[in-house]
Amino acid sequence: MATFNFASIGTIKSCYQEKFGIPRQPRLETEALSELRLLPPYNDPHTLREIEQFSHLWLMFIFHQTQPSGWKPLVRPPRLGGNKRIGVFASRSTFRPNPLGMSAVELVAVCHKNNTPSLLLRGCDLLNGTPIVDIKPYIPYSDSIPQAKAGFAPAAPEVLFEVQFTAEAQQHCQQREQALHQQTGDSQLNLQKLIVQILQLDPRPSYQQQVGDRIYAMRLYNFDLKWRYCENGIILVLELC
Image 1: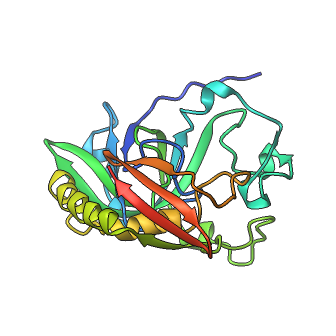
Image 2: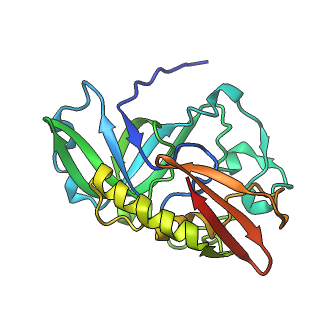
């Protein structure tokens, strides 16, 4: 059996600090910007020459957090309710024989800081610190196949919830947004809209669909976002702490 070794060419800096809460596919949220920082010797500016001619890119990456758990021949996709098992190669499960993933993302800008290039991206579904092993341009005439069949995922997931904020959470959101504008330099970030995009598709595992007093939390940027599920399809954001 042939084996191959891959070097990480860069790492992702994103707002997602843990697996729970990350959109299950790229470009389901559009508000947060991510940065792909190239590592030596791949941070040579020549490696990115003409890349700005492309609006979107393919990122090939490593599922570094789930890699130690190994792979499974059968998996349970969330889109099938977490109950039906299908083959790993008929899914995008993170538990794969080789922990490789790919995401199509929008290229916002090519940045140069201290003579080191990086890529500013939109629509990433990647954990902060994700190792990137390759970058390829997205070619619309070849990569987009309008008549393609998509099995159990024929369309984007439906919005399941209306997201509301308590008065306290609304105030926290405004304060956090101002701080993030200063820290990240992203003056266009709409934090409330980002939170709505993340929560309205319901990040919970399929087996946790009950409504009750349980408080859910995820690490976003440098704070904990907390919410709970209410009746009538309402998610109530409680605080950003």
